[in-house]
Image (cartoon, rainbow, N blue to C red; front, side, top):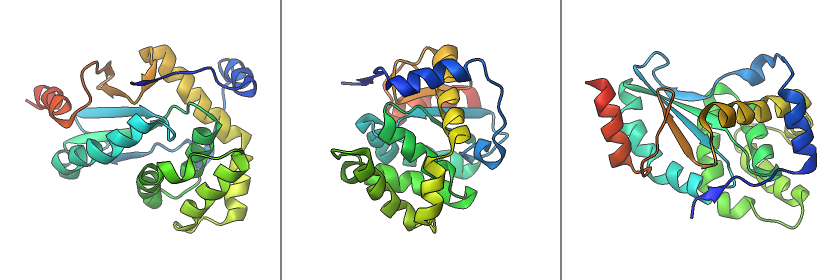
Length: 202
């Protein structure tokens, strides 16, 4: 079953209300994470949560084909937009945002690849330690990662993106795919997405 959006923790809900009426700047943390041609005729936005098994499945099976067939040929742009379903996913999103442009895509791959290993634990501190071990491979020190998790502006930015996506596209499950600002309602296989992409590229 598709993982449905659940109520966030009380703290998160308070932040949601706050950022709805906030105008913030985020420096390097506000940079877009994407792969492919920035000016491509087709943009695919992937709204996903790092703890969502269906998101991991999409990233492992469909996403690589989109990269190989389209993004690597500069035919499309694939944008990654955070839609965390819980605190563990939020922290993973923060860590990705604290990495460099060069390593962010690879770190996303690694986090999804090892989702079953890091995403479970009795305490969030235990999960964070596992995330740190993954991020350490990309020259992110524990000190930097700890500061990253404490970054309130970064947290607000991620949650604000989540709110914007939910308001604009009525997102109620992850992953949700947006193709050229239109919500894709079909089965998220490469074949189905390829048909939509091909229509636009004609």
